[in-house]
Every structure is written in structure tokens, then in C-alpha cells.
Image 1 (cartoon, rainbow, N blue to C red):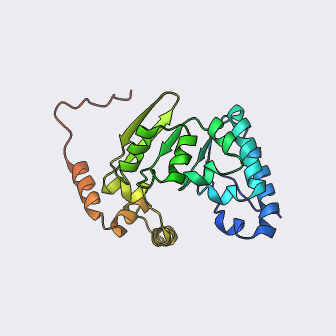
Image 2: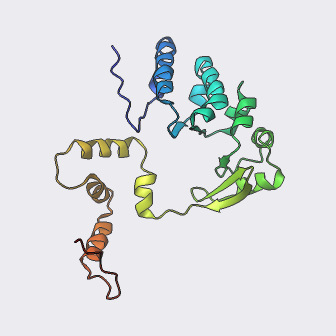
Image 3: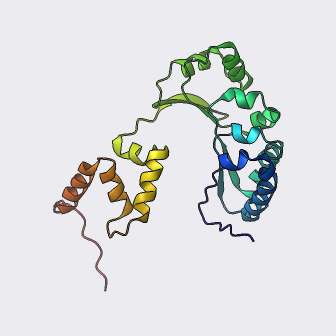
Length: 225
């Protein structure tokens, strides 16, 4: 019986499935079929996180190779994320990944000059200057963007409020979010989440701002006749 419900946003936790080789093959094949049913031309973002899990699976690696070559025609964008560039550079589908993923964002890596790491960056077309930028970039703030449209080191300095949501990860945070979701409360989830993350001062500032009178030069809303 298929109890898989597909919504606008769907998350599949693959680590436990991939850890069971005998169950992984039929589960993956069924999952592929269900996903491809949704690739009907509507704009779709397919994110493959922790990519090393998939590259170790011949079935998944073969499907990734096919997806990278064909999904663009179905208006599907693929995001392929991995913590180790060497995992990709040494994989059997490396040529397809290099050819079909022209837009790349590299995170800081102080070990980028090590022989194996440097070789992986060079295989992806980076020169010595670019590798040096990656090796000396500030962690959790600077990133190196490379695409046919240009290359640049950029900063993404998020404040505590943005980090509370965008960087919410790890078992403890997931447990907290699950607990808040199960609670019966009239208070919106995001407000309770900020309080739990000791960011209640944000709510105080928002509430104080909403209580202020509108500026004298503010435009009046159009009247309904």
C-alpha cells in the first residue's frame, strides 16, 4: 500500500534508507517513480543534500546522472550539496556533474591547498587564486560563487533573527520544533520558536513598532466606494 503523500514541499530523510542496502533498492526505485510523476513542467526545485550518501549507491548515482541531463527540459532545477568536493570529483558520475552543474557555490575550506583537495578544485576549473580565496575565506560568512556569468567572493552575514530560522538544524533544534508543532496554542509557531531560542526581544521590538502611529506623511489607503 502506497501511503506516500506529495505536497508542494516534501522532505525525505535518506540516511536510514541508504543504511539498509536490501531495502534501499526497491524503496529508491519507487521514490524515483513518484517524484518523476510530479515533474510535469511546473517550476520545481530538487535538492539532494549530503550527496555522498547517494554517490555510494549505484542505483541512485545512475538516476542522478539521468536527472542532471534531462530534468532541465521539465523545468526542474537540481541543487547538489556535499561537504567534500573530493567525494564528487572521484565519483563515477563526476564528468556529468561538472558538465551539468555550471553554477557552483564553494564554502570556506582551510585545507583547500592540500594535494587531494587542490586537485578536486582544479578538476572543477578553479585556478590558484580562486583556491586561495576559498582557503582564506571566513567560515559561516563568506562564499565563493562561480558560474558562466561570473565569479566572485561574497558575504552572507545573517543576524541572529535570520540565523534562528535559516540555520536551525541539529537534533536538539528538530526536537524543539517538533515539540512546538505538537503544542495546542493560539500563539503562532514562529513567535513561540523565537521565545524558545531566547529571542523574545525580537517580539518586543516588533510589537512596539506595530503600536507606533503611522507617519504624518504616510499615504492614506484608497477608500472603497
